[in-house]
Structure formats: C-alpha cells, structure tokens
Amino acid sequence: MSQTLTSYMHAAFNQKQKQQKIIWTSDYWLLGTFLSILILGLIMVGSTSISIAEKNIGQPFYYLWRQLTFAGIGLFAALIVSKIPLRIWQQLGPALVIISILLLLLVFVPGLGKTANHSTRWISLGSIHIQSSEFVKLFMILYLAGYLVRHSNAVRTKVSAFLRPFVLLTILMFLLLLEPDFGAAAVLICTAVAMMWLGGVKVGQFLLMIVFVSAAAVLLIIMSDYRMNRFTGFLDPWGDPFNSGFQLTQALIAFGRGEWMGVGLGASVQKLFYLPEAHTDFLFAVLAEELGLFGVIAVIVLFTILVYRILKIGRAAETRERPFAGYVAYGIGIWIALQAFINIGVNMGVLPTKGLTLPFMSYGGSSMVAMSIAIGLLVRIDYETRREDRNVQKGKRWD
Image 1 (cartoon, rainbow, N blue to C red):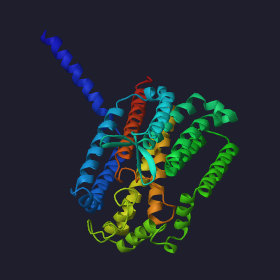
Image 2: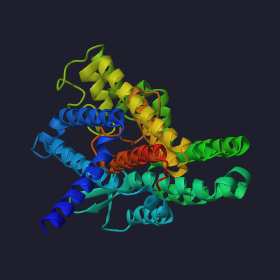
Image 3: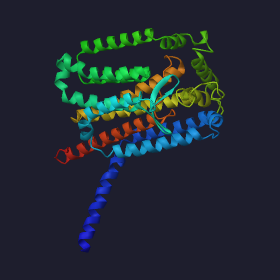
C-alpha cells in the first residue's frame, strides 16, 4: 500500500515538473523583454492617468489598478494558453473565424455595443468593455497559419487559393470599417498580406495585393471627410493646432519638452488635460516628455528585441518542420511590430493619427489580454520546438 502511494506521488511530482518546464525552458530573452515592457507600461499608465482619474472619478490610481487587473488576467490567460498543444489551435482555426465575425457583429447590437469618440468598437458587459478587434487580430493569425499549412502547395500555384482567405478578411474589414476602426483594419490586412508572402505566394500576386490594398486605403481616406481631415492635419498639424492638429501638436510639444533626459517621472505638463488620451493612444508622448530621448530609445530597443526573439522562435519552429507554429510566431511578431510602429509613428508625427494602443503599455484591457495570450502561444511554440529537439537527440520524434 505504501509503495503504491509512493509511486503515485512520484508520478504526480514528475508530471508537475514537466508542466513547470513549459515556463522554465522558455526563451528568457522573450519573457524578460515582455515583462520589462509590461512593467514600464504599468508605471507610465499610473503616471499619465493620475490627473484625469482624479478629476473624472475622484480616485487618482483608478486606471492603474484596473490596468494591474488586466495585466493579471492577461498573465493568467497566457499561462493557461502555454499549456494547450498547438494542434488544438490548428484544429480550431475555422471556428475562430466564425467567432471573429460574431464578435464584430455583437458590437452593433443595441444595448450591447458601446460608443465612444464617435466609434462603436466595444461590447459592454456592465463595467467590462471588450474591444472585439483585438481578439479578431489574434484569431485571424491562427486561422491563416492553419490555412497556409493545409493549402501550402495551392497557395504557391493557384490564384484562387491565394485569394480565398481574403474573402473572409474583406468581411472582417467591412465590419471593422463600420465601427469605424480603420487602424485595426489596416493592421489586420497588412499582417495577413505579410503572412501570405511568408507562405510562399508568387511575387506578382504579392505585389498585386499590395497595390490593391494601397489603392483601397487611399480610396477610404478620400471618401471620408473625417479621415481626410486627419490625414491633412497630419501633414500640417500647426496649420490648425486647436482643431484637426490638436493631438499631434500637443504630442510634439511633449517630445520637445522631454529633450535628452526628460522632465522626470510624474512631472509631465502635457498630461494635465492638454494631451487627449494621454494614458491610451498617446502614452508614448508622455513617456518621451518624462523620460526623454533615452526613454524613447529604450522602449524602441525593447520592442526590437521582443520582435527579433519572436521571429527567431518562428524560424526555429519552421526549420524543424513545424510550419503552423512558425506561421503563428511570424504573424504575432508582425502584428506586434506593426502596432508598435504605428503607435510610435503617430506619437512622433510621422504617421496620421490612429486609435491603436502601444502593445503591453497603453491602457486597455482587451489589448493587454489578447497580446498576453499571444505571448502564451509563443511560449508554447518555443516549448514544443525545444521538446522536439530533445526527442530528436534521443532518436524519437514527438507529436
């Protein structure tokens, strides 16, 4: 009896050790960089939101506590996802497309959709507001990765196989533009085109898609007075500094005040009701004011390292004949890189104003949770790749 109990406890201990290895054998650079960006983001959310939280709610750390909660939920979700085999996500691809469409449709249900700043982008569940587009981006990466694996030869040889996923993307983009959420639609289509390119589509097809997407973007800007005003305001923000160019001019003032070393953490003037959305879309501008050029460079370096490690994980999976894992990693890397590049570019005045968060840093629960889940997927990809290497060394293949 005692021997049986001892054997059972020994087996349970070994199983627990195997589960823990999912984290402890992961890419330390990936996890370290992710946590560094996350912690810096929490600090900046606390700094940028004190004044607005005190004025609107009467609790100076209201947004900071909420962001801490979102980060906790995101980390827990990432831990759960890191223990789910990738083959399950591959099988769920088509179902995730249906879920994506449903999430975007729920936004337009009266009483369920929430409107803010002339856009209806959130599903309101009491005090919880879910931004559908953040999860749709992740779900489409998983679907496209599975599609590229299932139709790898057809994508490279047949135009129909190349265009088929873009029919679904067109539906999703149409729903996003109805909200409207032009920024999310742009990130979604650019990520998809890049993944198709990595999937081996012909150069001619790729260039044709680039031309089509560019033409569609120009047409959408021309057809909307709101987008046209944003675009012209971006070209000359000082021409109308109190209207169309207000956000950008205030952001540029923040950058100018920051100089080399910054004015000091918490000492920003621009966050004191001069710069709208200081704790969300324009958090990076306040960071530049408080931490200066060195803070700006540090953030850019951190994101560069993060994306590099993600792409390296994808390359390792691909070279070990795990194409689905490779495409998922590539898609996540492209998504994070695009969104960070656009947010930083908007804050610095080199891109038109778009409502996109800075990954892991800007205030927002949906973005934090969705991107944390993406990190969990990367941990799983890295774990399975490393496990494959160990099994190959032992003379067996693991599936």
